[in-house]
Length: 320
Image (tube, rainbow, N blue to C red):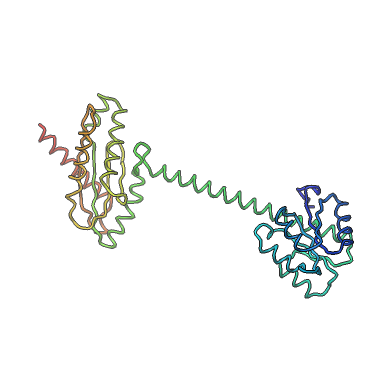
């Protein structure tokens, strides 16, 4: 048997009836079980009292002067403060159409006069139990919704961590392939030009060995920031690992010559503005996407990587 969680003394019941004898009888019946009773002799008083201090349950007479029980019920159900309060109609009217109207307006139950004590008590308890179960269901749904939101948040964080490089905040290898493969397939299908840049930090190993890994990490982070400053938010920028970065770009034309000079200009400005004991330097390979379904993203990266090493070798020969 289901029991009420709320004690009878904590349960507030409003009785609305213009007949004092009915109020006294119902009050006596309900107070015998320990319920806290409030009384109203008319609908206007009942509405004001329910708005100020919403009861747990309302027993509502139908035949009252000025404002009958149907009108009171209609106004109670139209207010966000009182619309969830269960209403038991009480009336000497025993016709089916009276009961149908009461239920259509939102009444939960109907007790005919003269009152039978046991019937009143069981119907009141049933409505309080239904309200309690409804409230418990709402709370369970709210907890479930909260848990779902927390789980989705945790999953999003896991996805972010699984797709993001911890040091730089850029996409990692996994994140890059997941996003760039989608964009590459769209480019192949729609024949939109795209290109791929492979960027490698020069002399990172020597800096790690001579100045320490903390300085080397700072170079990696600064390079990531320079890449983000140089390229658009829509471009996919990633750190593949170590000192290697890659950028996938959708372009409006076949002209890809502007990217490297723009990046180099930002690096030159960076070196001029910072009084570091090292100069940040990169080697870059740029390749246009082949809009052919037989060419993979891995092949484009391999091609750009080769071009990057050619650039690195050319710089070494020039410096020597």
